[in-house]
Image (cartoon, rainbow, N blue to C red):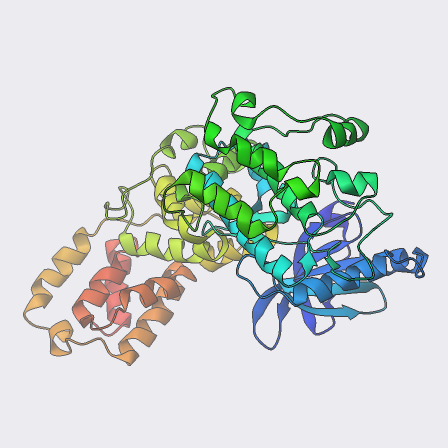
Length: 489
């Protein structure tokens, strides 16, 4: 079913539903809002008819697995694990309310052709294994470690999600007759009916490590071929599988992580992590590099979405990052671009400045700038929210004006430097700020609120504040009118 055809409930439990975040085989993941804490939440659902058809007497029924996700993940409080807030049921759904995480999963990065360098590879594994070590120490196994369940956030941190088939360790249950997981990441003992413990997660994490090193999976083909290779075939070392023969120092580490026998693997995720860091022999970064994240977003911007929103020349202008202290692209004021950066940063994180400055080199009015930036935002609802926050309307409305030069500012305030209202009250007052903010919203739309807020830094003089905000208004006559209405002249 297409996202546009999904029936969106008004609320689930106490959570008003604001949109659709994704769709899986068992149900929809909705985006909602916690009405008490005022934070966005992701609400993972299972359709009631699936639960009703399910065998409730089975140990691994859908309902018991779903409740187990809430039980297992809800007990884990770690920055690298998606937080679970609440389990609930209504007439149509069973649902879990959890932390809403912005970003792309690792599978998307790999599918888009991202070539992780050594620093990023080590950072991803160090973060993943730290989260797994925490979960294992709490007696929780994930049981479905794979790239699709690893979310790369805009700040370069990763989050491990979907404990949907996690199992709390139990002395009474160390064996299973049900094979769960994803082919290619399922450990041999799950296929062969052997003893099962936390080392099935070590195996799956080892497969991901191999993929990052070799840029290919160690086990390929159909499900039966993969099962045979997982159980009976040792893949080539990742450095020999990679055309560039990169980093052979990690070959033995990857081989041990995906060893056939659990006893031959690392005894813990912490031990696996320590081996990688010892081979790296440098300080490990706690985030993936910004250049990798920007490069991934650029690749996502340039195909289909770019046809409608970005000119063919735009990707070429996005190949080099601007200096943080560089002046704004010609035709733009620093304060306006800073406002746009602040708004889009809510959805893309620290890469906002790079994305906005690059797009502003090609797009000289606010409307086309917003259009060029929209593909960098994952969710349709978030794209709409960004457009409305900057333009005051959807992204398909009439074009906005461009922002002109600051010559008027210099000429108009040159005489005001020694006399007049701007020097009579050198300190910006709350009344000045409130009046100017309302006027800016009227003149340039909702971005005016951001412009005013960023210009009103602590200790700013009245003169400097109005000098800054005038750069966001196009046309000398309009600026003159703004100053009169603001009580400046």
